[in-house]
Image (cartoon, rainbow over all chains, first blue to last red):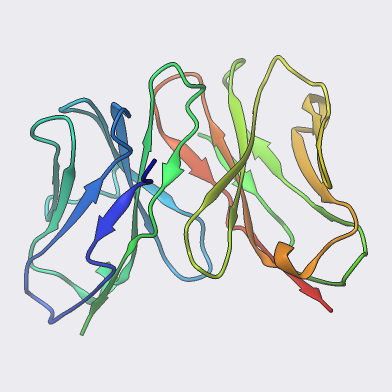
Length: 114
Length: 114
């Protein structure tokens, strides 16, 4: 049983560039979540998908951020025109509806914006 | 608004000591769910426990135990006979009755010294 996979593990980019991260959830999980975690803080909720539908978005998710889950399996998170304040760990989690909402997390993608 | 407070930023103990990590939450929902996650140095959050608001029974799992008290809005976590492998950041999280927005506390960094 493979866990949640995230790619890449690290990304270094220059300010103003666009970046895209990928998350592959646990295969039977229909719910997928994105979080952002900065140093010394807990994860902050960004958005949630149930199957392919994006059902919740945090106010933290500015219009430079977009997430998709086109076939209800993997998901992508894109950040356009990156800013230094976007530097953080981006975590993906998945869960199975009806499984008490227990979320299983990936190892994250660490983004550094120079 | 929902909020999770973990007042202890860092705790250091010597191996075999007992240690309690505090978690205080705020929510207006009458039904809600509380979680504890462990984030070891590798970075991947590991699920430890889930508790719903109607179940105030304390739980013990090996060296881990949890004390849920609705009267004080607290969900504290105790590790008995701590081990070096328990060194990690521990997060308490809250999910209300509506939506999938999980709110995490800032975490407590536990260092268990040999």
